[in-house]
Image (cartoon, rainbow, N blue to C red):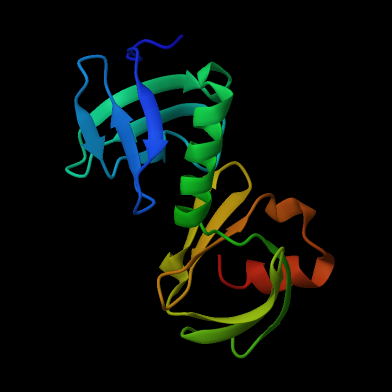
Length: 158
């Protein structure tokens, strides 16, 4: 059991919203899960927040979450956490910004527009987060594992 975890029940209401029923019987409608470390440690530290951003429940580890509740939490996070992983950079329109990048992701090929070099952020070690002009986040898990062409193209922007 985790530090802030109190006896509770987690379920979906008729509108598909997550509802946390706490130990006092209070119904918190529209709760949402938040990972403490969404990129570097996806299984550590998950909080259930109410609609105003107040933490209602904390789990140190996903292993501490009952299986039925974990399924609901994972469904909710999958809907909220859309972050394609860049596997290959095939082409860039120009080495100045803004530029158009043709990339291959774990969800298929796509084209993104990079506004500026500041939209490429190092998260930890060789992990990079790239924001396109629409605000969509793309992840490069380990830039050293990219193919030679992708590394060369990426190095021009860092």
